[in-house]
Length: 94
Image (tube, rainbow, N blue to C red; front, side, top):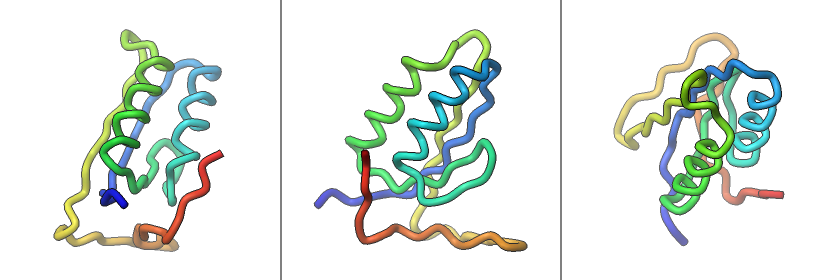
């Protein structure tokens, strides 16, 4: 099985219809997040697919998407009711 890496995907989408499509794509791969930031454990293939799908949806003149890879060795600090990101044993994508 391919190794999964943690990515934070943040977005600012200006159109409600595109916003809903972006949310739909990311919810299929996320393990958590809030509002416009999703925590996603992805393989290289899944990352390529997600980036490609988001590229089809957004308006590059008006919208913004950032994908940040979180190093496994990096410390993750959580405050409030936040839970540390966790790579689940399986994903249901459907």
